[in-house]
Image (cartoon, rainbow, N blue to C red; front, side):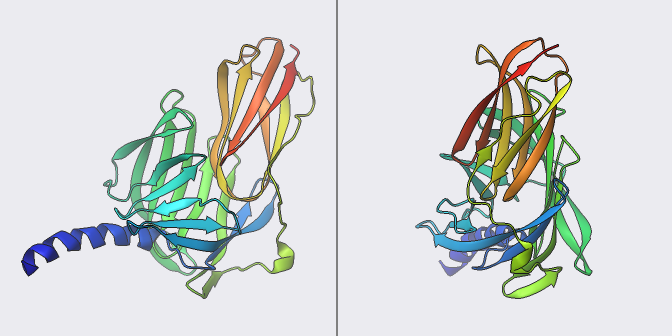
Length: 274
């Protein structure tokens, strides 16, 4: 009987530990980020952990009342996107293989790989995740998570969008470059600004602000409400961001752009004149 119990429990803890190894979660763990968008820095801090009845852990950041991630009892990491819980990092997938997810009704396949990187003075094992939109395969986003430090780099097909961790505090120990309180800007809400110029001809700038980290999607719709393009799909930390939207392929007329971030949504109208 004892041998049977050990046989069942060992694989469970092996899988569960992978989520903990690649996705550390302690109260007050903090990641200090640099973003090439706006050449700025910001912090992301765990401010609440909730252990669920099945031993999964919901993780809250920056005093948010909504959890961002869940470390499941199967060892994988899920992300809360509005009312959905989406598998985000599947550590049971072998390097070179894929898994499939649906993000805001759009199907993606995620390519998983494993390699090493040099972080904070040491070579360390990492997992890479590459999200590819099945309808538009050139819409690609990348994220890297490492053992010990967790998520440390994100990038998007839109480029140049490149956020990376310059320092962190994990389990009370500091690594890399740590920001002082005065280095950080506090963002108190979500905003989607009116594009400029508007009306526009060849291109226009769209700006948005996030009060907490979230997966961000921005879609373009025509005057009939039909989706014609997705121009942003990436994980973003608190801060302000800009997107240069090109009018390539459009005909003159009224269009709409819509921001999805956590449970926040906002739509703005703009006009393209050829």
